[in-house]
Length: 108
Length: 124
Image (cartoon, rainbow over all chains, first blue to last red; front, top):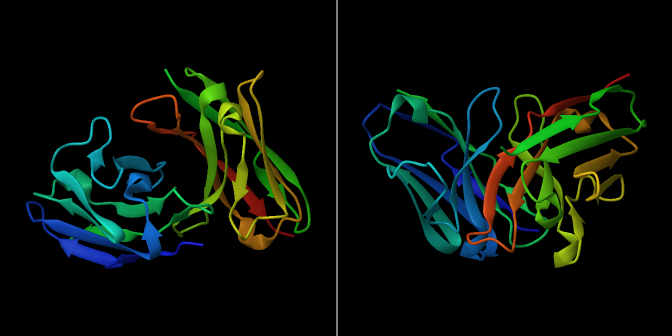
């Protein structure tokens, strides 16, 4: 079972700043199956990135993803007010699939 | 328009059973890989399980905490996904989402459609 560990747990930044979120896997993940989700209170998750670095439909280009193996990063360049939310990485390559515990991005 | 509508949630006593349904429309359900994801109150997302399309083998896999207690099935003739939950525990209390996330016949194969969620509360 692959365990995903996200850091930091909470990230406090101001609009306009750059956010860097990390996702570390307990064993190698095929990057084709590494995704990032955003979730706001009371809403279902929204897919941001798939294949570690491909933006999902309608996701602005201030979101970017990178990484391979056991280390992956989601970067948000120039935070907008609507970006403050909880972010999860997920691997869906090896069963059982798994989510990280989440990073809360809050307004400083 | 893709729609996923869950039903069947509610209050159940520990040890009891519940069956959730996810009615799908707006896409070719038989080609879809479908998953169940849950979220306990104030907690993060937890993957529950997944069923592949029959074309891709129909394999079902489960998260460790639910394996042996939960059963995922699909009825492609009714465009409906099911989650049979037995031997329920208090820690199964959560919002349960169904998700259409993958179709191997598409390029790219990843999709992002979710139901509205249905609440399951396990309590005496």
